[in-house]
Image 1: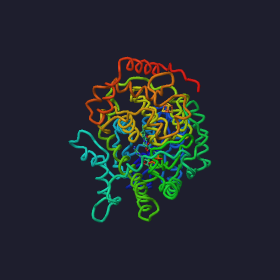
Image 2: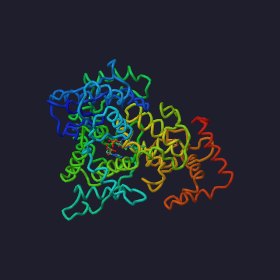
Image 3: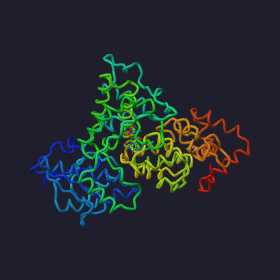
Image 4: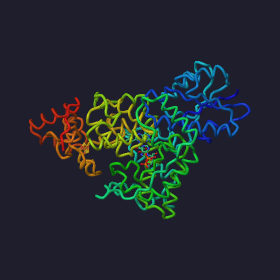
Amino acid sequence: LRHLVIVLGDQLDHDSSAFDDFDPDQDAVWMAEVAGESEHVWSTKQRTAVFLAAMRHFAAELTDAGRRLHYAKLDARSTKDSLADQLTIDVTKLKPEGLVVTEPGEWRVREALREVAEHSGIPLDIRQDRHFFSTVAEFAAHAEGRKSLRMEYFYREMRKKHDVLMTTRGQPVGGSWNYDADNRKAFPKQGPGLVPPRARFEPDETTLEVIALVEKTFGDHPGSLVSFAWPVTRAQALEALDLFIEERLPGFGETQDAMWPGEPWLWHAHLSSSMNLKMLTPREVVAAAEAAYRDKKAPLPAVEGFIRQILGWREYVRGIYWTQMPGYLERNAFEAFEPLPDFYWTGDTAMACLQDAIGTTLANGYAHHIQRLMVTGLYAMLLGVDPKEVHAWYLAVYVDAVEWAELPNTLGMSQYADGGLMGSKPYAATGKYIDRMSPYCKTCPFDPAKRTGEDACPFTTLYWDYLIRHEEPLAANHRMSLQVKNVSRLDDDEITGIRERADAIRRGDIAVPHT
Ligand code: FAD
Ligand code: SF4
């Protein structure tokens, strides 16, 4: 055997660099389903199922294409618990001259593969991942000498470099780089109206086998598989992309930050798992969105907003991850050490917004960005949860959770644990933000306008407690100084009341008032 080409669960791309010089007569592919990847964080059943189902479909495509494949199944007796152990055994057996892999998406996995190669004395060729628009080196060059790294500047560079939504004169189409100001509306009182149904892919035989396997092997893991309908092949992912462009993209944008109870899908794309597993390339997704604008099928603010998420945010968080790791994982700027509340794993809380956001997360392996950032993320930050625990939760629960995307979003954007490398200020807000963007508070036993008292909203109490606890560093941030100034207007009794109630919330002592 010349090369053993390693394909990880999030590298399901027949055109990836690992296959560049693949010779069917001399080379073979290696894939493995190992329990450790679902256990190093307590993965939801939907997350594990999406990976395993997509891997098995990809494996079948490889075999159909005549590529020799060594595939370790989770339910095979001989399969080991970790990627490293399984690879070590297979390498000893197969004795390849060399190992080939496209850059893994996770530091831990890359190090594990390097160690196996070193111990076995077999050279490991780690190839650049051309799935992305940018390379890590390009991002590092952009980051050089900058104290903080803002997405917007990187995004503009990407727009120019890849000629996306640009005029022939090198100006942004429409005259503006960013239409975010148009994209912050709440839904009208009567709700989001008729939202197109989610693209559903009924599980085929292979996926049904995986579902049964996940139930059997990880029965005690969080979440449910009842709603499972994610794309698990490239053909399905392409169909989901077409449907999004056709039906949802025109409505994406305006109400991108809005939430509605019982409506998990809204106008979002639901394409993150397909892209993160590499069944879709960001280039084809961006090109499809730009074409919809040029063909006058979708308005510019919607298209620019959508493209910015991919050409901007997605590339930028990957750059942050690889330029900041491994130290990034350890950052905890505000020394937050509280445990994550148990209800994050069950949704069992009286707080209506958290109940819905966690409920949809566990039911579908999905919640949209504002639910992640301004409900579950905000609450954990205000409570003072250890960023590592918050990270372990986000990495476990979503079908799109891969560390390069998840960690900067969680630790940097949502928890501000990097002290401002990514964001210019923490996303700190009271329950009134949630009240403005959704009708949750109307059915909640708490009152978002109150910071103390029996029915005070825990977000609002904790927001004030957060400002009080971190008054000094926050006052030094000019974007927070107005917010922090309000603390000096509180008298001692109010401060004591806020702190006592915040402590009671942390102890889990808040009684739910009867409505
Ligand atoms: P849409 O809202 O329709 O957006 C379109 C696409 O843009 C997404 O599919 C995604 O590929 C990309 N995108 C949008 N926002 C971001 C972002 N902030 N960072 C990177 N890509 C983005 N995204 C992940 O892909 N994996 C994660 O593990 C992940 N963890 C997150 C954790 C937290 C705390 C937060 C606040 C956000 C996280 N995100 C993550 C970003 C974002 O919430 C999801 O990409 C998005 O909700 C996926 O749903 P969608 O496909 O319907 O996205
Ligand atoms: Fe959430 Fe507070 Fe509103 Fe209840 S009152 S839904 S806890 S923001």
